[in-house]
Length: 330
Picture (cartoon, rainbow, N blue to C red):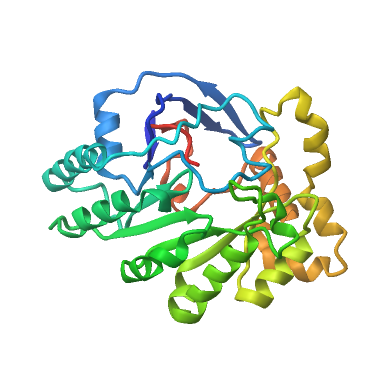
């Protein structure tokens, strides 16, 4: 049996759980069985050698208080948010260890890029750490190409946009649409964050148009104050972008908040179908179209003749196991 490791590492200050997924294929279907197995040192070393992404949870602090936040009042079961900030010492220990591995051995194949992703909370609140990490990596002589990326609410974007552009950061900006659509995303004083976010994003677009086109994407959360059609129209008109659209988290809802959740939640498929331009929007969304997702899920569960990606063409069709090493990627 061959083990194929998922080469993504998520670093936070929370305990790390490890789970394996065993898959086998016959002429009719693919069955998935959740298993637990002990990962040996060779597995871990191979994974670290071939790692493609490192995600650093640089802080759990945030300068917004979104009503639907998965770490907010509507949910339970998450770790306490204590406004902790990761130190450069913590990151340096990790990077020094990885650099030793990367200098000693070569990966199984050429890794075109290794992504260093900064996550929060709001990562821009710990910008001193981010700049220290970037400087440290850029001064290494390791024969790898690094790409920096970040998820941000853009509240502090005006302070740091020059730096982010200079170091070619890839940005995923959280914006739910126009002012009404953004009204669940409040600052710590309870005010709608739309004005400052919109101003900062527009400034970035106007000052660095090519960078904005190449490096900036958006994620919008669907809820009772926006719609798939409204989000798509706003993003197209204001930024000439196609955002990813996410539904509210449906897990871990507090019993006394369930009515509030039901009032806020909107189904992506229903919102799309209610649009007067359903087919046009569907073409623009394509893989993000909920109908495409359902089709892919059907093929994955009931077809015995499919490949998830290009690399799957080279995997033995007999038994194989995928073993993630690390916590869930945000």
